[in-house]
Structures are given as C-alpha cells and as structure tokens.
Length: 402
Image 1 (spheres, one colour):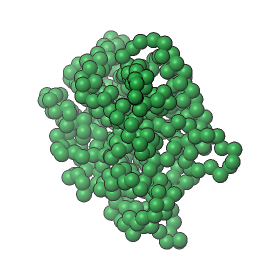
Image 2: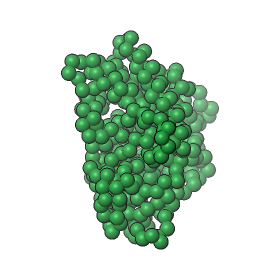
Image 3: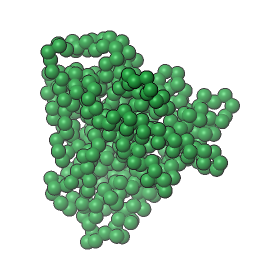
Image 4: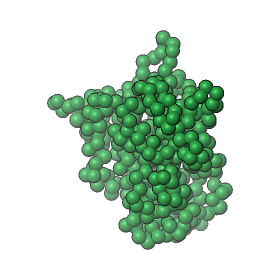
C-alpha cells in the first residue's frame, strides 16, 4: 500500500438486511487485500476472496491475539490479560485443550443431544401455538430467541436462572470491535469470574453436562486439561454459542420464509435438511470483519506488503459469496453440493462447536416445518424491524401465521 493511498472503511451492511455488504464484490474483483479502518479505530488488512480467506485462517504466520490484549496497550499499568478463550489459544496449549474438548462435539455425543434439542424445540412450538392469537405469533420471541439459550444451558450446564448475570457481558463482547479496551476487559473479567464461581458449584455436585465432563477429565491422572481450561471453555461457549446462534437462526428462517418455493421442497423432502443447513450457513453471513488475526512476520499477498504486527481480517461474509468458489453465489440453493463454505473458519481454529450449531439449526427448521407446514410471513418482508445493535444483524421480530 502506498503512503498516499487512503484507508477504506469496513463495508457496511445495508440497513434492514443481514448482508453481506455489496461492496465486497468490488473489493474481491479489484482490491482483494486492502487496508481498512476497523470499527475500534485500528487498521487491518481485509481479505475478501475465498481462497485467500481460507488460507489465512490456517496460516501459521497469522495468530489470533488475546481479545484482552489487542490492540496492544502502551501504559505500564495495564491489567493482566484474561484467560485465553478457545479462539485465542495457540500452539501446544491449543492442541491439548482441543483434544480434550473435541469428543464433546463428536457424533456419539451429538446423537445423545439430538432428541433433547428436538424436545426443546417442540415444547417452544407447543407454547407458541397455545398462546397465539388467530394463528399468528412472533417467531423471534417465541422460538428463535429462547431455543439457543436452552440448548446452551442443557449442553454446557449453564443455569438458565443465571442468564441475567452472564448474558449482558456476553452481549457486550459481541460488540467488542467498537468498544474500548477497558469495556472489553470489564466484560471478560466478569464472565471469567462467573465461570470460575459456577465451576466451584459444579465441583460439589454430579451431572452429565459438558462442564462436569471436562472437570472429570481435568481431575484424571495424567490429564493435560486444567481447571483454568474449563473456565476458558465456559467463557468461550457463552461468547460463541448463544447470540451468534440466535441471530443466525433468525436470519436463516427469514431466508426460508422469503423463498417459499424452496422451503416447501424442503418440507416435502426433509431428508435434504443436512444439505440445506450447509447452504444456509454459506448464504447467511455469520460474521463481517470481526475475525482479527495478527501477522507474526512480514509477507506479501496480492502485491500488498503485510508487516509483522499488522492485523489481518479474513471475511467469511465475503468469501462465501465469491463466484470463484461458488456458482451463482448470491442465489440460495438448498440442494447445493459440494458446499465448502468457511462460516466456521478453517484450519486449527475452525469452530469446535460447528456440528452442534448444525444440529441445532437443522432441528429448529425441521420441527418448525413438521409442526407448522403452512407457515408464512404475516407482514411484508420489507416491513420487518431489525436488530442492528451488534455486527450480527438479525430480524428483531418475525411475525408469522400458519
């Protein structure tokens, strides 16, 4: 980048949509690696093409910085960094923790969770239909919002009754790209303290949730897992497992409701749910320019000199709409195969809970179409209000009828 070339802003999502921002099409074509002004005032290199973004996630020269230590502070009185979340762990530490946690998200454990998630979804539909006036309801308040939190509480072992304690800090951190470091640290310390206190409670009781299973592993002779790692697990699941799933589920259901022909085909051929879920993960952008990596050495990409210490920002919201990787990328195709999207990242830090997210989304869609086969929007799509309070934009309400 020449000294006179101006920074570009991070492309903004059009109001009333989840994105992805249309401006990425031009960046992919003309400036696939470009220095941008990030929401918190820092600068970073936006990586907008699929192959480059996929490679960046797996590039050992690029590491995830501690959320509590980036951007670096110059004052000598800076507080110590918080425990690293699973997204930030590196090297041998990351490898040993990942080995311990992966079985929790494997096929056998998810087979155990599937009927429990289905029961939760069916109970929410029962409540919604029983209390509905004139066979209409708000799908967000009745279904989209409560389901991910119930799944998170059931799987991880979070007390649902504590939600007013941990959710405000979780929601604060989702806007971290636009917050001061003091605000980020305050929320991280609060979540870390809550997780540690919760684990102390769990140590005095029995259970089969993820926290209990990891605590048992940490106490096993020769285990590589520590109590601090279990604390980090709880914080990670709070940050990655609630609001992101809620927002994505709301967006995915809106996509289906605004593509009624494809939704009917899925309803009539439910065996296609797995393929449909992958397309919804590709089509609905999970993240826009909030995956911060930091270069550990100088290198050049597409003619741009990236220096050690520079932030590099691969953007799945752009990569998953790259025509070089997907035919007709702006077209929803619930039968699309293959579908190697990077909604969950790629490489060593690919989202550990990706399969749980797939199961939850697939179950939410299946149960809805089984129980309410004639469901449709009750208002024009363009009149739906949006929650745009975080980078993960989603409908604030989804009025439906059946």
